[in-house]
Image (cartoon, rainbow, N blue to C red; front, side, top):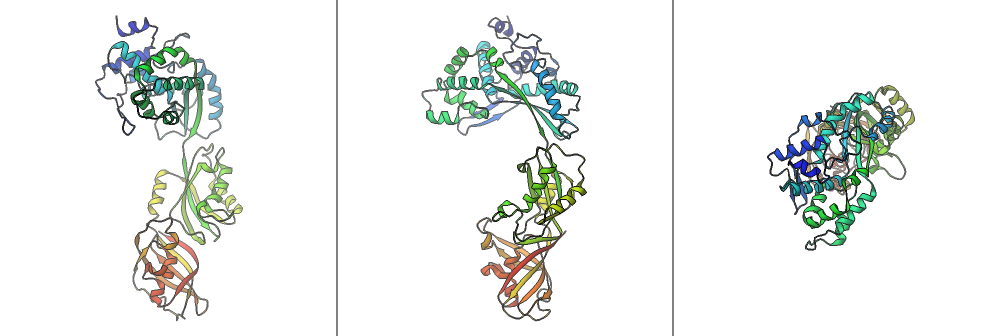
Amino acid sequence: MDLFESLEKQEINFCLICKNIIKLNIETESNSKEEYNPKNKKLIQVKLPPNEDLSKLEFNNNNDFYCFLCLNILDINHNIYTEILKDIKDLINQYDHNCIKLVLKFSSIFNFIFWFINTKISKIYNQNLNYIFESDTIRQIFINKYTSFFSEKLEEKFDNNEYNRDLDLIINYDLNDSIYQKFNDIILSSINNNNKIDIKEIKEKYLLNKNTGRSIIKALTIEICDINALFMNISKFFSIKEISSNININFSLSPTAFYISGNYIKLSREIGQNHFDRIFNISSVDEEIKKYFSKIFKNSEKDDFIFSASGREDRNVRMLGSGRNFIYEIFNSKKKFGLNFDKIKEEFNCESKFVKIKNLKISSKSEYNKIKKEENAKIKKYLAVIYTSKKIEKDVINNLIKDNLDINQITPIRVLHQRAYKERKKQIISLKEIEKINDHFIIIEIIASAGTYIKEFVNGDLGRTFPNLGSLLDCECDILQLDVEDIIF
């Protein structure tokens, strides 16, 4: 009598797919498909090799049949799939998309159920088969086998390549709350009296919920509970039919993120680049753009936009000229195709009195990486209104430096609370007098390397920046206003 005949006599049945999963796992020579370190609670998994033949097999077509291993998850003929197809189609139609990827998710409690099933089969088979079945196996079989099913029924193009899709169709399996409660009661009644973990800590950290991780499951089954007691209690109070009949299947759609880049111009000295720079109830560059984008990209909240820029300017510094590069990573948007960027730019620029945008376009992750990389590479041109304690004759400032001036800057006092203490080597490339307002006030142009603290170059920051404009002119200097005139590539 083979293994399956023996199990069937005990009303432990398997679908054809799962029978072959068991055979494959038994035949696979692997002593450690998973390793668990109780000390640091880390789990290392070595996956079994994929087997495409499993995807070609059919699930048993019997309404009263319960598979002891996959819990009927691989039964695509289950009525629930037919019932949700129309709702899935209606939701898909709300999103701009070309291609969809199928995703299968389990709540964490399934890992606990799989442990129990593996243990039971191991005892019957009289061999250590603790890794006979993994959730990744059923996930991959489901996706390989039923992608074409959803594609045909929904009349949509599916592609499971990570980079080709616009939408993820997520089929999610969970269990009723009563099953969670029942399992947790069993766990508490099966605790190993010799373990050193306080019962209060167990209740806080180790009871099952929808977000329980695999390492917690392993901790429960290896060091917290008495394995034999846990196994016997589950066997006594549960049946596979009960678990299978309490499975909930739901679905959701998750649009892939996409990128939009451009340049912003900041016309106000009262707003910062992001909300960390804001004061009182005044806005920021990020918030101004988000407020408008949330109107365009349907079903998007402000938290669905992640803003990045190529560097930053202080709140009281305007950003002029061609503007500063920025990019948004946009999540959960129903709209991504057919965007009229000229119209978006014009409407935004009419609405916002603080910020203007230009050069809007669909972008990419590589553009995001490029913008972040260029943050410390670009040369910037500034206009500054400065004060000097002594009268400065004409052309003195123009002749202060002949070649690039190397300066050392220790992290300024004004930003020391949010920047690491370090010494930076920067360059002043040119100084030019633009307009003499009177004997003590002058407008100058400064061209400097990226990341130079211009205010501190002017006032010296109590000697933390040297040389500085004050030391070069041999007088006290301060800065009244500063603008980024342009960013030079």
